[in-house]
Length: 263
Image (cartoon, rainbow, N blue to C red; front, side, top):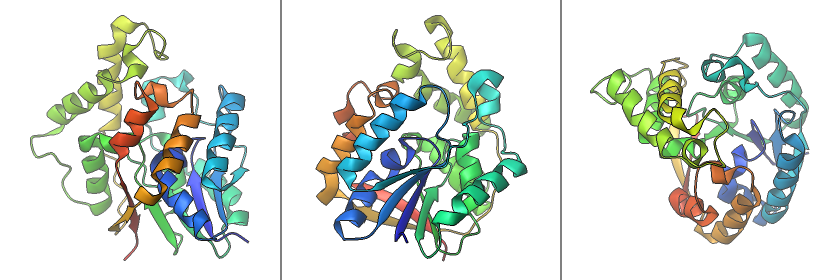
């Protein structure tokens, strides 16, 4: 039986978002596992090897459910669609054997990736569920604010409207190595990066309300800073898509991780 289950849509999501919490739980003697839901897809072998190395640094067990991630072949828009209810049921059924008696920490689905939304929806009804802020997407203030507004049922901020929100999110994407570096581009020629950033931002900021009353809690993870930094650095195929240096990523995350729980 497990004490803590961190549900990761893909390899790296849980560690990027809650690596400090994972390390602290393991150090406290709790039986901790990271359950990766969508562990089959492009580059999966390398990503799972990185995940093994990262989780070893944090002291957590790795469990993979073997579901196939949503492919990018349907275009940027598909990656930010609402999840199919059948997909949510599939995730819920695959997770069930590992959740008995465990505290569950799942993604809040900041950024709107369809796989993250499917995992959120599958865990939303669990009485003991908590939710981590999906990193690095939560570092984009408009994306974080939009998701929190969706959950609260409040008008989506910022108050100056969706077009300027799209612009702010597009500028965030445009700065990422994923779109700007010769080696990092995965979504098209470098010259198309501004258009790609705009398309991603447009898809990410389309409102998809999923109300759930939640209370924010902050966790000081500075005692586990070194372990978290080492775990982040293990994902050598992933962090360079967002930062030029793994240490920059760790610094951007800061000493506090936020989780959200039901009142």
